[in-house]
Image (cartoon, protein in one colour):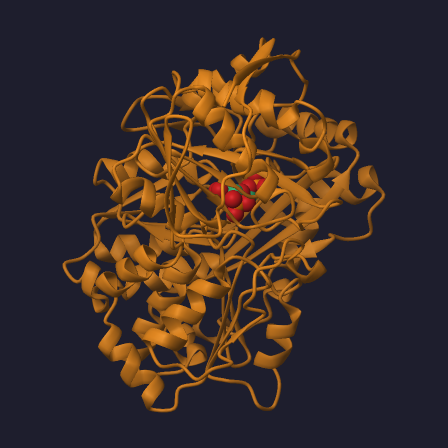
Length: 543
Ligand code: G16
């Protein structure tokens, strides 16, 4: 097997975003695009010679080809070993767990998360550090730098490695171990949660639907929910991963998981519904006629954490991304534990988790996780909810009502404007940034501004600073508007507007969120001129 050196030149647009490099699949399939980026990763992490890596992903279109290229490039660079999920499948949290439990030097995850797959969909490549978490900006910066000066890459000429058969083979001197993608992860879940209690719950007739959205969590959910916990066959729907996610959009929110939402709001709704995304790190929680926002979900998990064996002694601290609602802060106040506010991006939680400052984290973008891995974890969140429901023996609706009575409610919604002309979106943010200073004390659409700023984060562990992480406007009555541009889109720009309003009046805890937020929504439009500048009459997605 020869190692060849291929001449190339830097390709524009290889700057990792919120979570690795995400592009149109066809872009990744262009000559040298993937290879250049992998070469940049190897350089950015200081080489892979003698190292052990994990490799896997959500099985989307082009993953099989990309995995073979990465294996041949790892071999060409002298990697000692690559641990690969069977058929190159590994959910993101399972990959994180494997990186940690096998004490490897990191791993590569092939996924564009919740974005659609297929030749006309999206693809992505992300490097995770030895702690199992997404590489921090200090590393992604080096990878980007390397991508800008790459002129050659090395690759081994070899036949495809058989990734369908479990066991160990080799590629040149590099050992390739193909592992069951589910086994270790399922074991970890059984150590965190009270599986006996969950078995009893299902044995008692508790009905649940888990929508795997034709993505990676299908095999994980079937094994854990149906095989280990005894949920009836058919509990998991859309459970076979397909390269184009059944031509769907594997994003677990009320828009894209409509099949599940309709079921949960229908006459024969089961007790509990949940969904996960393309790579298994996001989750949606829904009870009978009750959708739980991700911001509320993490607050509920924190408030009830001691009911779960792993967290029985309490939480070390909690963390949320800045745009996530402050419902979690209310819980932290009562628990008297540390509460941290980080920029959007799971990578910012890594240091807090590693330092033992936080043990539970959550984001408005349907991500919840803990220190059991260093990624957010969809199925873990679902099992956490099940464990709480098994202990508290009440419906999701009653649990939420009880939570809001105890802590107050943070009405919350995110409005997304997708595929906006990038220049228009940038100008909108720039102009708003320019007038933030003048806003305090003024009234916008009936809302009095208390303070306004641009969020910057100083990491309390390593002192690094992340600037320009979103524009915040807070109103005197406990409302908050946040504007930022998404770092995961692949087409034009996505403007995200995060809307929040606190409510403690017991009479006003059961409103429809869009109704409760109508003043804040009007103020957001008035202060930014969003609808006028983009020509849009409303958001593309409301979550
Ligand atoms: C990624 C990040 C999350 C982030 C989300 C949305 O999630 O890991 O931390 O909240 O993107 O980011 P943005 O608002 O910049 O689009 P995932 O599930 O896409 O990997």
